[in-house]
Image (cartoon, rainbow, N blue to C red; front, top):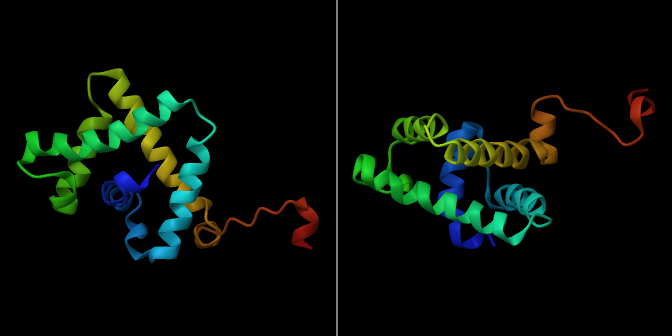
Length: 130
């Protein structure tokens, strides 16, 4: 499902979580698996909307900057996503915030991402801290 948008999704991911630029291929695969896992139980229509949003980001950048999103400088990518998250169209704003949320979940949901911010939750609860 995500393979068709992988380069754009990764460029957006690095814009949302700059630390993601340091991920190697297995770590990106883990991030994408978390995102896919969150999308899979959702209706097919929502999954298609997610893919459409990522593709739209890639090509809407051409209208603004004359280049696709993946070809923009990092500052331009950030500025473009900020413009979209503040767009007057509610559906666009919701889409950007949902995309951002999924990417944050994918990054920090990995074991290494959680450790990087000191997250030590355990299914055993407080007993695990002893």
